[in-house]
Image 1 (cartoon, rainbow, N blue to C red):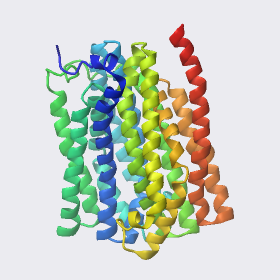
Image 2 (cartoon, rainbow, N blue to C red):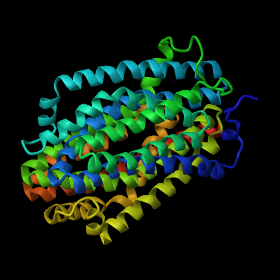
Image 3 (cartoon, rainbow, N blue to C red):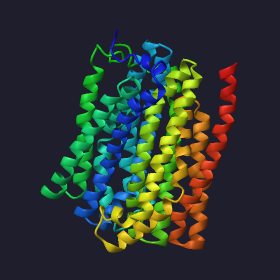
Image 4 (tube, rainbow, N blue to C red):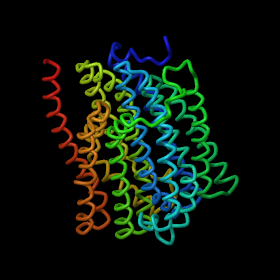
Length: 450
């Protein structure tokens, strides 16, 4: 039998499967968040508070790049899981080839357009005269390596969905380890400043990409490179983009929301407030990535069993993932409320920046014990190929609830209003997600008994 046929997804105990697939994904996603945290720590401690504020200005760029990457990678990996569940191996191979071509096209166009208008874009994102030089120096290098980033993320998602979660985890850990080695070397030893962090990121991903390309070149793998799979096929492209539209919109909207956040913080608090958000964002990102690790572990299990019409197993993995998601975010709440200054002090020694960031952490985590429901539900709908519901949940949290609050509350509360906007929108969106999931499960139960 060829390697990688994931028949266990339809037969093995669901709890065992979730641990098997989620633990590597959690390690990978935690490593991915540490990747960004390490950059922030070395930039904050090694370059200075304005550098970390400039780095925070680049977050919308990173979100937008991730949006285009997820449009292809997440959609294709979900489609691949469903095809494998249907035992349609030929089309699963074609998905691999189409991912490579689409990433080359989209990654190249994104870099070219962004580099042409970089200064104007960064000013729009909330840069000032103090922070623009740092943000620009970082993004020129990141954008030059954008195709590498897109290809690495897309192929790693496919590797995970084709029954190789440990190998996908290993690729991510490889980038983190290399980044942790290269960051201090480039920033402190070679005195490259914020550019050193950018070079460390791109070179680390390049090494992992080479390893992934070699893995998919192995003819013993069920899903591997071969002639004929690189021609773009309309159905694969359309289906992948349709499924990937939900995470794309989530990341794209997140990009514009972060721009609005940066501009509001700059208006009501100044450059250091933007830097404070950069620190808070990294703390929050760590725990959310752990939850995303659970949802990535859930994705192939839910997708395969939904394709195989084993609906009881689909529901079981959903509820187990929600339970773990809520536990993780509750941990984030406890840490954020009890020791916020200890957390933010890792990123900077500037007392004003520490004070601002600690205040932000305490407010932003207030609703965290509940938002595991929202995070898991949105990704569940995506995993079973129901993009409309996933899109609605993704958009409602940030666009319908958060954005208006970001405008209204600072008028009343000043800088604090920006932070409170997160907590209130999280509470509202969790209620909406719970109602939508309840409504879907009623229909789902009917399908199961029909």
